[in-house]
Amino acid sequence: EGLLVLRMKVSTWNIAAINNNPFEYWVTYHDGDYNDFMRGVESLLSQGDETLVSDIFTDVMFKELVDELRQLEFQSMDMIEKMWAEDISRRKVIQGFLKDKSIGDKRLASMPDRITNTIHLVDGSTITRPTVINAFTGSPLSSVKLWWDAWKQFMFQTRVEVFLGKNMATQSQMVWSLISPILRAKYPAITPEEQAISVQLQIL
Image 1 (cartoon, rainbow, N blue to C red):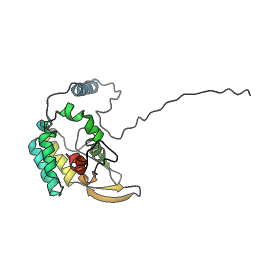
Image 2 (cartoon, rainbow, N blue to C red; image 1 turned 60 degrees about the vertical axis):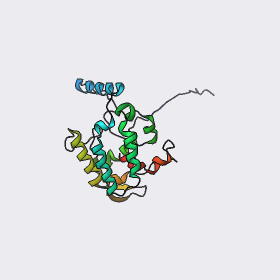
Image 3 (cartoon, rainbow, N blue to C red; image 1 turned 90 degrees about the vertical axis):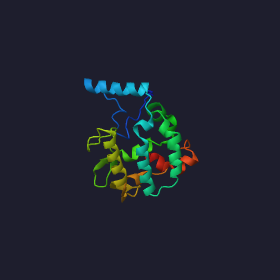
Image 4 (cartoon, rainbow, N blue to C red; image 1 turned 180 degrees about the vertical axis):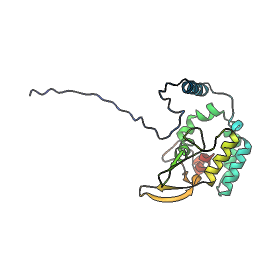
């Protein structure tokens, strides 16, 4: 008796981020250049354009990628080539790729980005994939060719030593080999055929 009972309603949300993409989070920053730049990015993504994937990632670049994957003895490359020619290369960059919900549901772009965007090494340092969506501090990526050369070297010629699993074992391996298959058991949107070549699709 005599106690006052109070009923409280609370809410919470997770504001953490698993990546460091500067275009994913628009921060409060009182700088005209920054805000104009971010508004420009937002406008481009909102309006879309007619640029095709193959206008940026060309057939020549795709062939170079296929050659790299064949050297690594990946299988079913004919299926990758068919999907490129008949589907992926013909998509519009924004509406048909970046905003395609099915790609998101299948994790074909977000998963490899999560794994290779910023890699935490055993010695406590980090290494970043050559891209504008992280804190990459390597050579300037002032042209598609410079980016492509840097990306290939990072993915296929860079060896990293990382922790594996809960037992904190370490292993030295090439960056591309960090990418694992995407399984239908966890992501049912992916088809059995896509699951079989999901590592190749993620690299692409």
